[in-house]
Image (cartoon, rainbow, N blue to C red; front, side):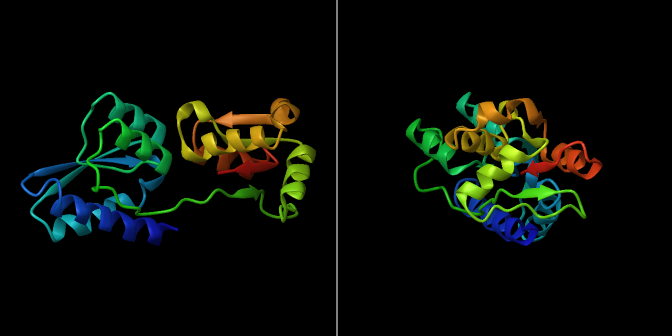
Length: 190
């Protein structure tokens, strides 16, 4: 997954350098927190081959989207497809300047050594969540893609109220991973 992000971010930065910020000394990049491990290497590679410097600002995609909606400018921004559509409709992104650079998957995970849950179909996934002692995922209010997606998914499955008492919403992916690793959550989703 890191390689996909890495390659995709280089493409994004290359596009920024050649398209909209050709004369800029510093490129302001809004990047999802999920890319904070890969981005320093991506930026270093880009800066080796370009006269431009990159200033990366990390936040959840929800927070980045809000900043862009409030006209806080960035030369390059990485947001979700639905957010990009909204920004294009609002005229906050130059039409034709967007590029798909990565896809993010959502995964379900359990503590090491625990039996693998059956998620082979919608029905078995639903039963797995309904039978879990505890479930954890990112707080959708924090604006992370996985938390927003998971909240919508359990809503569409019609089980949000059934698992609410056993669901812990956490501030970020790392907190979800730690909760599962410590045994504080039986199932994590991110």
